[in-house]
Image (cartoon, rainbow, N blue to C red; front, side):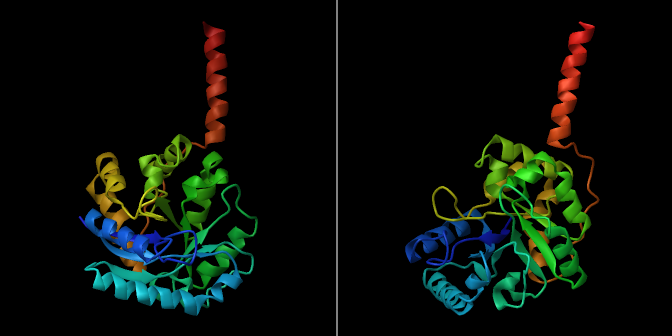
Length: 267
């Protein structure tokens, strides 16, 4: 089984990802050994000012390709961006969409909230056939307490990308529980490494793949780690399954309190 990683910070000198060329090469070698076949470089774009660095980013990407080839790395590299949500979000830059396909873009929310303007902006973009891919929704505090918000985004045409580290427990028990609740409800459509280095956050997917394979089966694992990413990179439609039933964490806690109270009453 080979994998396609649509979310990585392997470009050096651009953001908080790879510190230098040596680290970038180490990350790609780890990825190749792990079975990763294609990688999208998605540097952070925090504002329009970062988009002004587009030529610089493209230049570093081209050098990464050359260095990877010289080091015997056979991974197919693509360029994109992880865009921090803004009210005036525009996708007219070359790097705004994944692999410059003009259709799918990776978007990041603040970790503690979802801005009010997001739903309308997503609606407008989807109407223009620009498809949002929400990065690591399982780490967002609003979705942790109410995964109905994730369901709303999928209803509006967005896709959701989980981090491999969330599945393996790297980001803690709460995030891990949330990602499995999303997976159980069929609200996750692809898995990425969100790699930042070659140690604590490596560009590796197999451990998460093995967990998904055991828990959800071959078909689900294949879609999350290969076929859906492949469709996305070629700007084709991704057919999503109808989301299943889910319980919000807030309502679950209330239900648990009533259950505990009832048990006290009848004993």
